[in-house]
Structures are given as structure tokens and as C-alpha cells.
Length: 463
Ligand SMILES: [Zn+2]
Image (cartoon, rainbow, N blue to C red; front, side, top):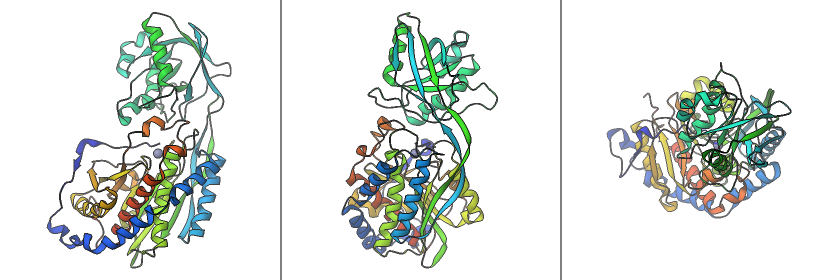
């Protein structure tokens, strides 16, 4: 998943051509880059190469949770293939990552009848004692109601049955709920899955404990199971539930950020980053989240290589590790780059699923936005010319770069189905479409190539 930090406080859709003195030198972007953009779009959309490569990755290795052997095996495979592709400076940059394991887990309703519930432990949760935790259940509809009913929560398993509105708002229940429940004396915390649709599918995701409070086991129930427990409470039928979770933290484990480049022909030290995150949760295949974005970024760079389009600056694909439960990969990348971050011209991430692309979401200065909008105009053949502006980094892994003024962009896609499958067993290859993914590759290739080749770098936010 995505731990998007999108804030739409400052949302503005740029409409119409940008005009201004700072952009005069970029005014001929359309004329200069039309042919290259068209050939990248034709190349990306000619076949299903990206989707086939994604299928090989996720079917061969499965999920890629931080600390797992499958993540490292997938990284080895990608590094080998990137070398075979002829990319330059292919390397795995070492990162130590948190190593949480799920273990065996279950939630069983004991009263008013025995029933196995559809559940998934939340990432980074502590486990229960071996015999489980058996306790009465209190259902509340919000974090506020939990505070109002604090006196009723002591000794209970609290269920936060909060309906999905949007991801950033509803995610707060998952991240903050368990510690809030612990503060009012709950012995375990359940949440309604953060999902916009459900066929009784539980959805996991990271929770975060307060540094000072008690750490109680935390899990998500399917939307349907949460609703059933709520109905029992509404009818005045007391509930008892047994939660068993074998979750535990192991010592930090070695992982890697995957890096490969096309070295710039004139300004090799100036860099456009394009990437996704290679880790995933331990359910399904992490195909949407985020193998798809990772492979699309990689394919965008491979396409430039294949078409002999070598831009003025370096284009670097970065597949960050540990986005889902720690962000160690993005922090390590920023730390290792140090002063070189000033030479990062643009950072692009795809972490919303490689559905039909609509354009880009940008955090950056007005002058960089004006240039980006002209480049987006080249995406007219795939109808992905939109540029939305946001005030904070639109994607998690590029946040450390955005915080130092690097223009940061996320591929904007038609995400209507994303939260049906996100962080669930349903996140498998079939949820993605080869033609839609090909258009995502095209959109990433055109943006990365043209910005890397412009005569002048995109201005940083502080400039
Ligand atoms: Zn993600």
C-alpha cells in the first residue's frame, strides 16, 4: 500500500496553456518533444510486455513482505533482468528493514453463537497469548464514540466499525485506533477493514502504537463481519469473542533498494527518479500495490533504452523497499544521496495501481508546474494530460525528496477499484489490465524522458 500522504488542501487543476517569463524558454516543448513522446507512447502500447513481466514477477515470487525470502528473491530476479536489459549502474543498495511476521491467527465468535470471522491481523501488531484473548465485545462507530464510551471499554475487545469515506481519513482508524482503545482499557482492538467494497475480504495495513501506551493486539474484520457484530449489539445480544494472533517482531533484516540508470549524455549528475515500491503486504501478490508501479517505472526506462532515447540528464529507476511497514527504503535512499538531492530534478512514483492513467499529481513550485503541464500535453494520444497540484508529497517514497524541495509527482490513475482489493488476498494480477498498464508505462516514460532532456532543470520549490 500505499501510505499516501496526499493532502488536497491546495488542489488546483491547471487548465489551459501556461504562460510566464520563466517558462518562455520551455515554450517549444511540444514542438521539440512531440516525435520522441509519440515513439515512447507507440512503443509502450504496442504490446503487453509490461503486463507479462509483471505476471512473471508476482506469479513466481508471490507477496514481498519486508524481511521475507520472497522479497529478496524477487529483488535478485529484477537485478539480473535489469542487467540483461542493458541498463547501467544496476545495483541493490543495502537497507535494514523491520521484520514483522503474522503467524497463525483467527477470530472466533463464542457468543451469541460460535462462528469463525474473516480477519487479518494489522501489520506491526503484537500477538496474543497462545490461548488467545477471550473477552466481551464493545462496538463503536468512530474514534469519538470510543472516547464517549470509555467507561464501557475496560476489559473489552473494542471493534471500531467505521465506514470507509476516503483512504487518508479512514486509515486513521487503523493507525490510531489500537492505541486509542488501549488508553481506555481495551484488551484487544478490531477495526472494520479499510475497504470501499467487500466480498467478506479482510484488509490488512500498518498500525502504529503510541510510544508510551500499552500495545494490544489489533486486527481487521471484513466489512460484513463488523456489520454483523454491530447488529448483535444493536439488538442487545451480548457478544464474546476469542482472538488468537501469532504475530511477532523479529530482529531487523537486510533488504535492498533496487536502482538502475540510463546515464545522462550531458549532465549525468542531474537525475530524474522514476519508481515504485517493491515490498508488499503478505497477502495476495501485491500486484496492484505496488509490483505494478515498480514494473511500470522499470519498463519506462527500458523503453527509452530500447528506442535509443538517451536524455541530457540521468534517468534513474528506484524500487524502494519497506514502504508498507516502516519506510526504511525511502529514508535510506535520501540519506545515501545526501547533498546529491540538490541534483534531483524530479521524482516520480506510481503507487496507486497501474489503472488507466489520467495524468499526474504534483507537489512543486508554480514554475515547475507550468513546465510539467506542457510535458503532460504530450500525453494527449493516451488522454493523460491532467496535472493536479497538492501541497504535500503525493506519494510516500518520494516524500524525503519532496521535503528537500525536489518536485514530486505521482502517476494519477482511475482508482475507482483500488480500495476493493488493496492490502487483501484479492490483490493479484487479474485486477490489472494489460492495455491500461501499457498506458501507465507510456505516461511515466514521456514525463521522465522529457524532463530529463529539457535544456533547463525543473526549479526546486525553494528556488
Ligand atoms: Zn503501495
